Structures are given as structure tokens and as C-alpha cells.
Length: 125
Image (cartoon, rainbow, N blue to C red):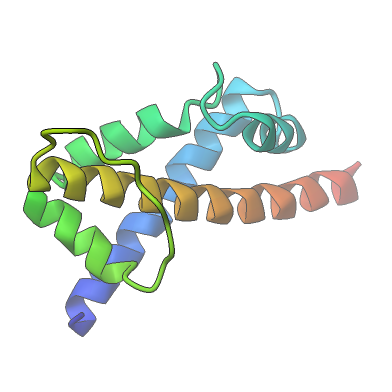
């Protein structure tokens, strides 16, 4: 991956984690609650990780084969298993894989940010 592409991906990930964590904190009334809910069920009401990733991919114009390849190239060292549906196009499979692996990384980074926020909240009290 070229350096400029890596920089663009890092910006995408940073933006996603920042937006998602802010949303979680607001919807769950604090970082501590948000962290618990995210770890319990990433797609429950008030968390909806996969819906957020779908919207993010659409907003950043990544919901196509080329966008998926950009994400997959950046995350090529990640390990995952993706169930394949019968008669699924290669493009759809690429998008599904990119969203899945991006969602996992975004959740990991969001959990780290929420943990830090929780510690900060506790030190203020």
C-alpha cells in the first residue's frame, strides 16, 4: 500500500472511531455504559455497529468493489472467516469482507477509546 493510501485509511479509521464513540457515549449516557453495551452486543439498539459501518462505507464511497479493495489492502494482515452465500458476486463478497474486517477493527479501537474515556471520567469524579 502506498504511503498516501495508508494515510487516507488511517484518517478513515480515526474518523470512524471518533464519530462512532461519540454516538455511543450520547446514546448510552456515558462512556462506561457505552463500553458495556458494545461488548455485550455490537448490533443491539443504541450500539448498531454494522449499521454504522454500512453508513460510513456509503458516505466515504467505499461501498463498491474498488472501495472494498482499498480497505482490504490496508487490513490484509487481518485474519477472518466470512460465510459465502450461494450465487454471491465477487464484488459483493469483497464488500462484505471489507465491512466485516473494518467493523472488527473499528470496534477494537472504539473499545480502547471508551476505556480511556471511562478512566478520565472516573478521575474527574
